[in-house]
Length: 259
Image (cartoon, rainbow, N blue to C red):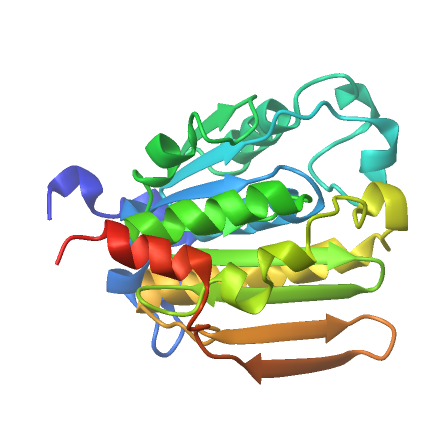
């Protein structure tokens, strides 16, 4: 490993509580430093996921979100305060991450992830973390990740409930689990249905935790499994699911990949 990629004395001190863990050593921490991740959405989920991974030492974090901060965001989006209203979410979040950890690289885009930029952005990453709030983007991210074989951890939160799962390698994808024709409406969003302040932050913490397990240890506990979290009953379930034989996305991705 090149010397500049090794952990400095300051970094070793910053991450010392992680390095002390059984099963998590300097090698795992150096893997984090070398990792490139893309966080889609700088809202309720994205803010917390990004901050936790920045504190943990993920080396390069890219943020993408076209939204402007509004007063209603402050209820749950922990990176923002009243003085940030009117500014781009991804830029303010990026600034906060740089203040938290000067040893990492942070890049932000104030545009929407769409067909014109998704492939270029996703192809550069070791892991994609989706925390967006609309189905159109979720299906696009799922499509490009399976096409390019880039791992994806997807988190969602609405009301008192959240979901989390991973797409990796030749596993079942988002469209296997949630067929596109059943989710054509964009009305099921926080702005329309409401969300408790804690719900997206719980799911973001779980998403960040899974990301650390994958990036540092190569662990994939939610591959082809759906985690369901209920904030009213405090119950959590993990459901296994299989690849859907007739999934259009998996069929198209398989066709597109070289033999």
